[in-house]
Image (cartoon, rainbow, N blue to C red):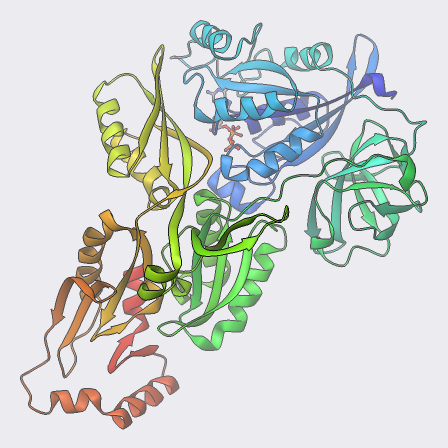
Length: 614
Ligand code: GTP
């Protein structure tokens, strides 16, 4: 098939508007998969199936006959959620057009808007598709107007991906409205690395888009980013599983293995350009993709320290295919050895947590409350790249590394926290939803940027601290809008903040794993909640246990766990080292997992209960 008869496109949609169902129909229609049942072929990861969300972009090639001529169509499925924005823009880079799928009953939603602008910025030709027209409360006319009013998009294709109604009109629209890829098979090879993953049997798999030239098995090629040289092994198209071909030509998207294979997946730098060895001077490399930044962090510890290795294996297993997760060893006085994990966003974090609990065994794992990076601007200056004096900056992702009070007083200029621009959509009816949402945003230190009415929808834009968002903001938002609200957000940079480090003390000893950086305004409420909650999980002992929440030396809240009985020897027992040691040793042999915080022995179950998120 010549390049004029190729089309590379993706499907973008708000979650649950039917992107995967429509993709499946298109694959059936072209005979790529057998009809019948719900395949959701493109959602390969188990977690995606379970949660019904697409995390990793999957792709598939289709052959389609239009007006007597064969076309090679390439469908790239993209994640619907903004946490995976990097994946989304990567998939766009390999496309020339997009199907913008909108649910006929729900209309334009937060992620429809976000994805539209991302695709628009990439210069993709957009074809609006109104899905679910079979639904009783479908309002295709209203959605048509909305698409025109919001995005200036005309001529939507009306379909029901579920019943198959009018789905046959979609591919002709793609062929007529999406331009063919540019490029020439006669030019030197220029190939973009779009994605890569790890296959247990065959090692690192690369997904590439050939822009110019032809690549075939045995070719000697070079990464223009790393300068590493490779020999091409098997290559081909995904149809929908790997189908080997003799070559990949300009315009095509396909998979590729190297022979010998790439050593680690981290050698596969997404956005890297490949060319034939010796042709480096003739090829202008692509600019490359932005490296995504981790914005949400948690600590993960095994309840039983003997299982540290097992936890490490589980984490390694799960991160094989997701390089956007950052990993560092962490040691906590209260919880022992563990890992600090960084994620792109809140959904990314909770999806991973679920998978880790599944893989490792949920009851054996302690995961600390999510936190965000804080930026410390020091009084000390350093020279930047241009040689100018600028304040030194440090990013802190672990409360344990937060500077002491006197250091902050004498050496720190200011502390900043990350903000996001959140887009929230809610139905305009019932009207009290709007009031509740505004209240929630204000409680969470939000600043209103925009409030727009769109027929039956209200779109609100707020600047919110990311820290507030990781505290189950979405859950609360869903709660006060009966599940109707949608949320999307983008990075809005760091802003000055009044940050404090809140600590939990047990008989005056800080419990490091529980400490959190928070805004001064929420410290007291959080502190009071902490002491009550922790108390409910601590067993009575022979002596009194005092649980406090404090900022530095200032105690904000206090609870006491009474001793079993008034015993003059209680204090003595409590402070006795040999007794404590004996107890710990006894417990080590047994199954129960205990930890000593100062003179108090605490069952790991207490931490488990305390850290469990409802
Ligand atoms: P993400 O992968 O999470 O972004 O979701 P998606 O956009 O891929 O949505 P999906 O295809 O999983 O569809 C969501 C739900 O809508 C499923 O329960 C589908 O069965 C249903 N659905 C999809 N298309 C139609 C349609 O045309 N009519 C009706 N009534 N339901 C549909």
